[in-house]
Amino acid sequence: MKIRVLGCHGSQLPNHNTTSFLLGTNILIDAGAITQVLTLEEQLRIDYIFVTHAHLDHVRDIVFLADNLCYAKRKRPLRICGSRGVIESIHRHLFNNVIWPDFSKIPSAKTPLVKFEMLTPGRKKKVGDWQVRAIGVHHTVETMGFLMESKEKAVLFLGDTGPTGEVWKVASTTKRLKAVFVETSLPARMQSIADKTGHLTPVTLAAELKKLKTVNPDIYLYHMKPSYAGAIHREVASIPDRKIHIIKDGQVIRI
Image (tube, rainbow, N blue to C red; front, side, top):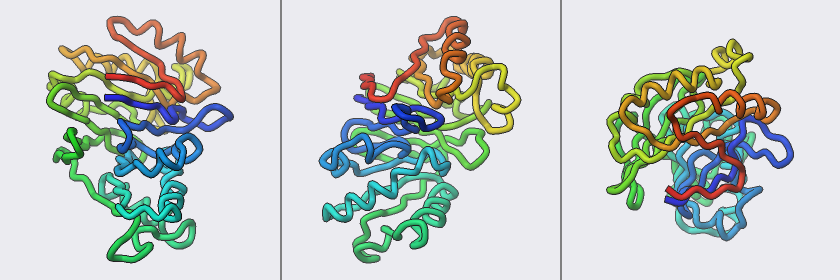
């Protein structure tokens, strides 16, 4: 699996894009940074966007991508996949003919540019060589992590989350699990804010990783608030017995 980090930050500043991962050439996990990173040719290859939750830093560039694909006259639809609540929020608040045109009815209702696909938690969806399973996590809004499985390997993307349960149970029983992408947004001194906003600090991250038990995948951290990156780096360094990597915009990860 080739994973290109289009954006991996919890806030936007110059040279700090919000969350979006490109898997291969045609699958996105979240859509915080697409059109300012990818060329039009690269955008035209995207077929699926799996959306963890509907916060703006994870969905913002969906609207611009749809616009670009429409006026490039792409024939096949862009499939936006997520839980019922996520899909309803994106349709109601973005593609609502007020904030942005409703590309689920353009160029026509029969042949729309955008198709919404609701995922049922726990049920697998086949996409190419991958089986995608949505698993609920604990954030301030309805949020899903995604387990991507092939015959040879599995990778877990948690999305935004505070301390949670079910996703770690699934991870612990996934023998081919090679990597976990998990957020760590704030330093330990801001634990109370992290708890209120449904995010992790290095302290709660360390506690969450203990739930992995017998599996030891590579851990890739993202969604840091840029102002606190230095403190988070120092605190994460003290977490024992885990292979932890802090990722950067533009990085290419091969798993």
